[in-house]
Image (cartoon, rainbow, N blue to C red; front, side):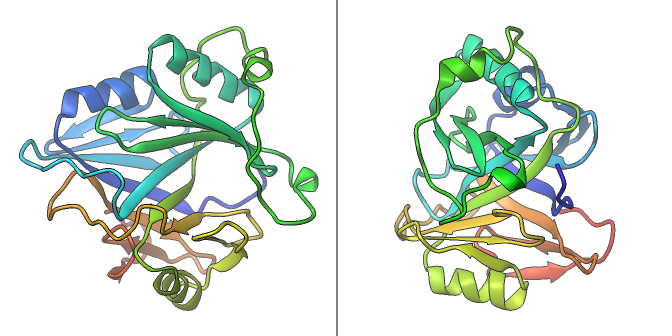
Length: 255
C-alpha cells in the first residue's frame, strides 16, 4: 500500500458485548482474545488492534454527537473490498451507503451499537486527483461486487487506515492535530471539515462539525481512545474522542 502504518489501535466502550463480537469477530472475521472486561480483536496480519471494553451499564451514545464518526479499515485491493462487502450484504448488516472519493472507494456501515465503520481501498497514489485531494461521487456497487463472486471476511493484510471524528470546534482540532502533533492539513474544501495526514497520505484523521455540539453522557458507549505512531516513532495515545487530553506513552503501549 506504500504508506507507513500510523494508526495502531482503537478502544470502544460497548454495552452489549455478544452482538458486537458477532459483528467484528464472526462476520468481519477479526481474531479474538478475551481478558474481561477488555476484548482484543485483530486481523490475521496483526497490523492493528480493536479493543472492546465491556460495560453493561454504559449509556448508549446519542447519534450524532461529538466523538467517533467512523473508524475506517483499509483493504489491500478491490477484490478484497468486494468480498467483504458481499459478506456484509448477505448477512443483512446495516449498510449506510458508498462513495468514490477519488483517492479511494469507500463503503459505510454501522455496527450493532450504532458505531460508524468505513471499509475502503485506496487507488494507487499516481491516480489520485490533481485538484482538491478528495471529492464525493457515486460508486458503482454492481461493478464493485463483480470483482469477487465470493463472500469473504476481512483480508489478513487489513489495516486501520484512518479515523473520522465529530468535533465541537475545527480551530481547536487544527491546533491539536496540526499544531501539537504536526500532522499536515491535507484538505480544507469540505464545508465544516478538515483532514490531516502524515507521509503524504490523504488522511489519517478527519475532523468535522457535522454532528453539532451535542455530547454523549459520561461513560457512554463509543470511542474511549486510540493510538497513533508519529514519524519520529513515538506512540501517542489519545484518551478522549477529540484529543483534548493526550499522553505520550512511548513504544509498545496500547490504550
